[in-house]
Length: 286
Length: 290
Ligand SMILES: Nc1ncnc2c1ncn2[C@@H]1O[C@H](COP(=O)(O)OP(=O)(O)OP(=O)(O)O)[C@@H](O)[C@H]1O
Ligand SMILES: [Mg+2]
Image (cartoon, rainbow over all chains, first blue to last red; front, side, top):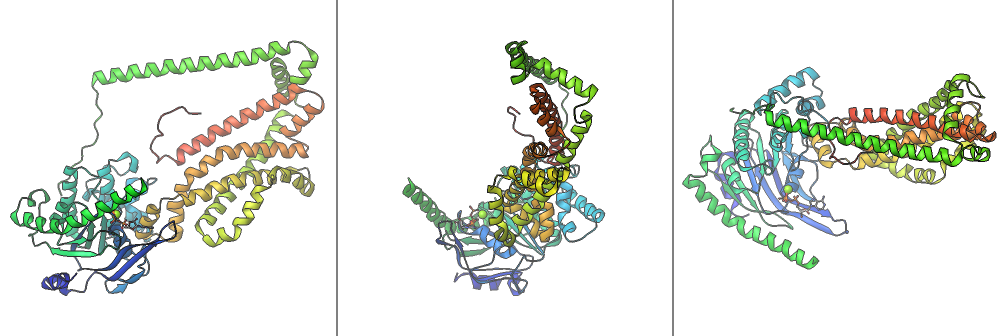
């Protein structure tokens, strides 16, 4: 925590009013057995407008929970979540969310799925569909308008989800391991596409991933979280690699390798802790 | 943006089409064998029945006989029944069953979804519905006949009561089983609560609701016929009652055959509706189908 603030202030992005700001956020859940489980504890996080922030951390440390707090789907137990200076109390306006699991509606065609956002906001059908076709073209799915989601590959469904989020031109884009289900090649292609699309509207992004290479290749800033329970920010790393970046190639640059080693150093101990926790828990059960 | 996705190309490879052909003819042969086996079962059952009863008059009165059932059906179709033309009886029963089925289903869906979506309503009405569900509802038929007379209203009411609960519980459960991710996604995309209900909850719950419709239509027929049985002037239920009263087992069986045909047609239509409404689902894993 101590190292975070000075670093932030060095960057020009940090001078702007943050797009997303979490201050002293704690989130507890009541488990089915009645006890409380503290997923997040005293979490502080700032993301500037147009900044691409990646979050990495061991499984169960509260990454998805952080995103639901920013989106307004859940409220923090203590602390405040602010988006553009406004405290989040209900669904945050102007936010796009790509969920960890498929969340496009299986009973709607690809076109109808992408047109959902404008339709929900009261846009006429024909206008919404024109916009949807436009976005489908941008994510490379022209010609698949009439398919149902189950007729697409996993990667194509992710593209639909991406188009569905971006069509609303969100000022804030939350992505929860969007590409984790994809193979390595598709993932690299999608990452490049994401960067290009992000460049079109420049939303502030929080991108959750397990893949450190992906995090560094995409982000302006990588946040490492500590293992749960009571996950919080362990350290923040500015990624000063120049843009535009080509995801497949950037990993060979010395600066990339350098950053990778630094961040992995911070991440490794947390992953170890998380791993030993789950194995201990398992042994106790057995 | 350099994205190209190849459209699937249909392969017209000769070898492949040959295996497809072979597969098809194997499927056809298999279907033929199944149909033959079914025919054999039918012949053994009906033939056994016919032989067992023979021309023994008491047995005919007690059990009926296939040839007699066919004869009864022919007489009904040509000469009409003791309470009027056969088509009238079918029509009356169907009318009661269908009207009751539609009202009961609609009420079931609306109430199930309302209670599933609005916690307050579920808490208020939950106990009432549990109590109503636990009483043997078929007895209400007598109450309705007493209160609303021998016309079709009392039967429709009985059908509604029988159909409602099945659909209601399925719709209610369907709402609770909706993937929370879908709801969250739609909400983030800007959907109002009503839009979520209509575009997310309803389609998702339909899988459950449709499953209940098959059973519910059976209940609708039972309701209409029991209602007529308990007190009526027209309909298949009356026909059965009359046949029973005159020791005409063939007549009872013949009415049952007619009901079975009606039920099968309805089943087919509901299957069509299911297919249409659930078109978005991946094809079911293959396995025996009933
Ligand atoms: N609704 C809930 N009720 C109870 N516990 C919850 C709930 N949601 C999350 N948790 C718990 O909070 C912790 C953090 O969950 P979260 O989904 O945020 O983890 P994550 O960092 O996204 O993990 P992963 O990388 O595996 O997706 C987990 O231990 C989880 O069990
Ligand atoms: Mg997660």
